[in-house]
Image (cartoon, rainbow over all chains, first blue to last red; front, side):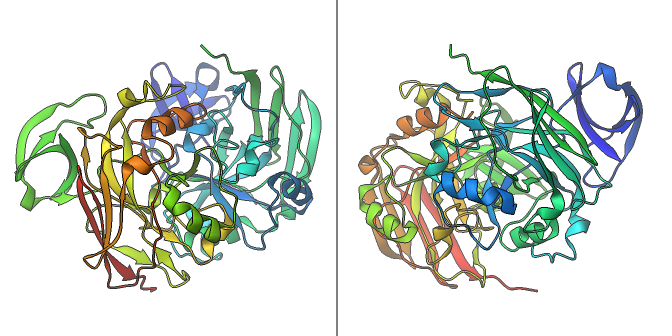
Length: 259
Length: 259
């Protein structure tokens, strides 16, 4: 099942994607799917980021092919444990919304990732219990200022600047998260292709580990890490993140216009 | 004016503290104060954390007297710029709620701080404009696992573990933030006394700087940094953070009981 969040006229709503139609839901999908009976054509709605999380998490260093670059830019040792961090909720944008690069940023990279969407509150759960707390998965772009800001260590602006966190286009609830092809394209050209089976920590291990210290809330998003090397984007580019069983998250890149 | 958020029977509400009474508000205080006309006795309500922020921020290294300890535990160079980071929203608790120490934690310190409460959305504002975007101030305890977790660098569990972020008891809207005595007491004994005039970056400089990259939202909380050296707390302790013009934030310390 594919769950969307949509804007239509002045309303926002969750819905189920059904071919070219959206079957609207009553409320959020986290405590159970209740259809309102109303349908809209997909062509007449705008897709939004598919969740409104309490916390938007990232996890560092989760693909072997990304470690060398990460070590070079962050200057830190590679940890043996998962390394969660907060991607500011304010950085979140939806499909087709622009990634806006501020003039202060030197080198802003794409990072295409599989994103976990938490369904049910999780605290002190085991890896075996984790799938019961996951609603589904979406695509994410962990946009990152690599040239200088990541050295600050706290990520707040390197990864948390407004518009640096596109997610979407929808939540796929029926997906094996460790058997997907993950592809990043810049202006239509494949930049990176990897397989989610290469993750160092599985999505179940990540959710269990994080839940030992913090309560994961319905709707929370967890970026599961980038693979390979990444490159800088420039205004005018279009970046796409595709997960084979989900779909394509597409965002244009713009320069910030200061007033 | 002192703005509280309260729980009463099964409701939560904002209100204005008026002697021993609470004058309830309609909705949140951020887009204007509207009283509902209803009053409750302070003794019959429970005070909650006085805001429900989109983001709960911390700022590192903002008092000269805290730098040596911070350098020793984090092992990082001291930055010349403000160093914001995300305190997980899930760590927030209110006055009198317990700080719960998980068995995995080695050494958990108090850090008493003045907290900025954002009133109006702020993006690309100047330090001169900042006061117009601040609703008021409260007290905060930036509880931190110092012995091992802060070395991870990302703060997610060192400072973001559930219950590690007490705030309260209320929002004081009429306060000079740079002319307050800040006192921390452990079991009634003064551990630390400092003056907010010693801040390296003023609250207006902090809000302006953060707003260059991220949108600050109504209700957002910003911890403005700890002073001096701090010590570990243990189950059974009671910790108090007092800001002279605001009041006292008091929390007991407990050990986490695993089921």
